[in-house]
Length: 149
Image (cartoon, rainbow, N blue to C red; front, side, top):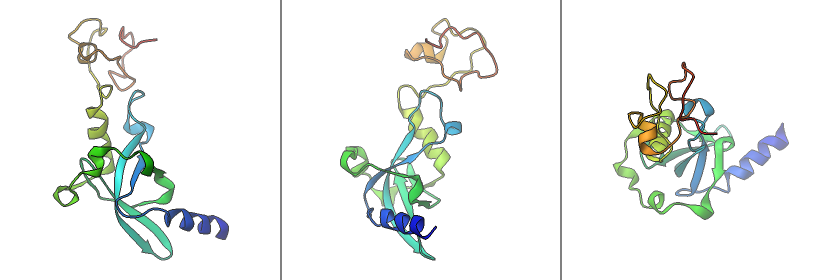
């Protein structure tokens, strides 16, 4: 247990303020076609009782809950320009789930519909945008013609 804790602390010390990282988005908070990682910046590094946690900001707000190193994926080498230039002081607090929903909806595949038919016409918002329906679209009903192969 001590070796594990020492490796966690050593890994956490590699990260500094304003480093780009990803936080994993759980499968219940995304569709099968959505992004699996939320891009964030480290805005605060907290050390309490020998444990290091981080506070993050994404382009939609400051995440309210601090996260430990186990949730972080290093993104220092490929930090998006938009993320580098966000003004952190202008951001409001946001929950992780809200940030994930906003993030996946800005991507082209982050679309869901609730059609009553088979999604075969342009009345389906997914079909209209040229994307396949996902498992989060009308999930209680089968027979969708826009699911892809």
